[in-house]
Each structure stands twice: as structure tokens, then as C-alpha cells.
Amino acid sequence: MSPSASDVIVVGAGVIGMCTALELARAGWRVTIVERGEPGSESSWAGAGILAPLRPWRYPEAVWELCRDSLARYPALVEELRVASGIDAELLFCGARLHDPRDMARAREWHRAEGLLCADEAEGDREWLRMPWVTQIRNPRLLKALLRVLEQRGVVFRTRCVVTGLLQEGDRVQGVRAKSQDGQGSEERLLAGTVVVAAGAWSPEICAGAPRVEPVRGQMLLLRPRRRLPPGVWLLPEGYVVVRADGLCLLGATVERCGFDRAITTQARTALLAAAAPLGEALADAEILRQWAGLRPGIAGGVPVVGPDATRRGLWWNTGHFRNGLAMAPASAARLAAALQGETKAAATSSR
Ligand SMILES: Cc1cc2nc3c(=O)[nH]c(=O)nc-3n(C[C@H](O)[C@H](O)[C@H](O)COP(=O)(O)OP(=O)(O)OC[C@H]3O[C@@H](n4cnc5c(N)ncnc54)[C@H](O)[C@@H]3O)c2cc1C
Image (cartoon, rainbow, N blue to C red; front, side, top):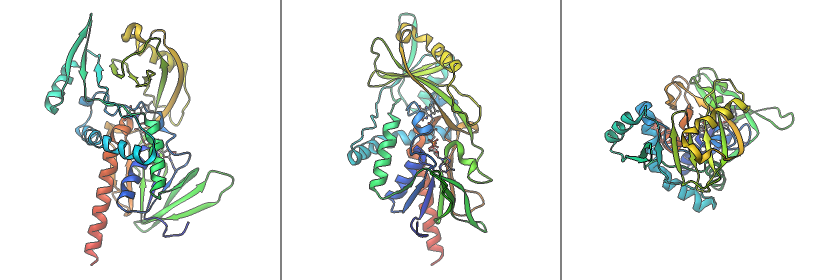
């Protein structure tokens, strides 16, 4: 790679890294993404695809702001990707049903304050709150579409290549050190004026002084119910069910602090099936098709770090999206790109 081949290196090709790369490429930046494995194969793939916090009223306002802004951006993004890549990420305005007596009053109040519709509904002895604005997406398809469109736009992907540290002179970051995962590759120096770390749960491994992100394992089940259910999201006291357009159901998700262990467990399977019990017969004899785990980038309060490093020039963070990275990705990326553009313009003006 020639020293001046890219303006920006993005570390990590999850939904956050790829949405960031798209924003920057649209703005005319030459972008290289360095990805340790294959693009879109970690937490962003493992997610359930719900484009909202499960209970937004329990989160800091900063999380909801990024989700609300992203929700407004998703239809145009998915359409742009569909037209350019031929891959439809299947954005589905399916709504959600909150079946949790503990949260009903607070949820109604929150909807009123936000000016969002909700409605009390009941069937037999079951009552729930309908939240019609909740949306789902097929995240693995979104990631495939992003990859294809980024390649079309000339973004360079260095896959199976791990970033092992920063290149720095004084307080100025000048690129990254990276090592190919294939064979016995020696360490390379990849130069760029700006480095954006979007390495999810692994972000603290890039350098000292990183935001306090830690891996939080989430396990999920994919089920085929015996009778077809309408698409939607069911928010239950101990978990959730996403009924996809194809009729398959995602049952999620555990929240486990066990380091970088991506193993699946029988305890989790039992707990997830028990969490679906309030649905009664609907999933009682469903066929279990698959179980998987992903490592969320956990952070206190769930508020991601989106912006420049406090002390090192040329270093930016877009990380710590915890349980809502899919729901916050487009707005996080837009926010980071706008701030980066703003800083570059300011630097150009002051050097005139
Ligand atoms: C079970 C489960 C269910 C979820 N459900 C939802 C949901 O319904 N809605 C929602 O909004 N969110 C959900 N999430 C959370 C969401 O998936 C994450 O917040 C989001 O994927 C984080 O994106 P990311 O790009 O930061 O991380 P990742 O997708 O993990 O991407 C980080 C990338 O960085 C790469 N990388 C790491 N270190 C290096 C290095 N040194 N060099 C090069 N590359 C590196 C990794 O290989 C990886 O590809 C869920 C998560 C899980 C696990």
C-alpha cells in the first residue's frame, strides 16, 4: 500500500465501521477498512435486527436521539443500498407489542412525551401496549449490501488483517500497525491522516486510553413455529421475540459478562425458551433451527463514544454501541463524518 493511498483508515468492518466508511466515501474521502476477520461477521451479524432500544424509556436521552435519527435515515439508506447492490435489507415497519406490566405506565408516558403513537390492546386475559413505530431489518443482508456498495465506491478492504497498534508522532496519529492473519505476514505500517476505531468489543485492544468498552455476550435462538405468526416484535419480561417476514422467529437474548467467549450454552437455550413462555402456545412446540452468540461492545449507560480522541490528533472513536448498534449506526456514522469534515475545514481555514 502506498503511504498516501487513503485519507482515513477505519478499524473494524461491523455495521458501525461500514456505515462510517460509507458516509466518508460519499463525502469524497479515500477510505481503507482494516478488518481482522471477514466483514460483518461479529456482533453486527449476530444481532436481532430491532431498530429501537427494547425499552427506550430506560436509556439516557443520548441513546434515543441516535436511534430516532437513525430510524429517519434507514429507509433512504436501505433503498440506496438495494438499488446499488441488488440486495434488499428488508426494512419492515412491523411494530412491537410490550407484554410487561412493570413497564406499561412508564412506556405510555414516554410515548406521550415523545409524540409517538402507542395503543393499549388486549385479547382474552392478555394485555399489551402496541408500539407501531418499531422497525426490524435483516442485519446480515444489510451488512452484505454495505460491503458490496463500499467496494463499488472504491473503499479498500484489508480483510484478515489485524490492527496491532497506532503509528504516532508526538500527539499526532499517522496510521496503524497491522498484521495479516494469513500465513506468517510481517507487520505493516498503513499510513493515513485519520484513524477511526470502530472495532466493537475489541476497541480497547487498539491502544491505551481507549473508551471503556467490554465484551457482553448475547445468545440467541432461531425457531420455526408450527403455525405462522404475523411479523412483529414481542417485548417480554425476560426477553424478546422477533417474528421475521419469512415467519421464522428470533428469540433473544442473554446478557453475559464472560470475556471474549463466544460459546453457546444449554443454560442459555433453556433460559431463552423459558422467556418465551408468556406467548403460550405460539412457540411452545417450535422447531429450534440454530443457536448462536455474539459479543456486544458494552459500555456504561449504553451511550457510545462518537468523536475525536481527547488527547491524540487524527484519532477518532465510533464504538460502545452495546445493545443498540444496528439501531444507532446510520446516525453515529453521520455524526462522526460531519464532525470530521468540520474539523478538516476548520484546519484548512486556519492554515490559510
Ligand atoms: C445476540 C445479540 C442481539 C442483538 N440485537 C440487536 C438488535 O436487535 N438491535 C440493535 O440495534 N443491536 C443489537 N445488538 C447489538 C449490535 O449487534 C451491536 O451493538 C453492533 O453490532 C456493534 O457494531 P460494531 O460494528 O461496533 O461491532 P462488530 O460488529 O463486532 O464489529 C467490530 C469489527 O471490528 C473487527 N476488529 C476488532 N478488532 C480488530 C482489530 N484489532 N483489527 C481489525 N479489525 C478488528 C472485528 O473483527 C469486527 O468485525 C445485538 C447484539 C447481540 C450479540
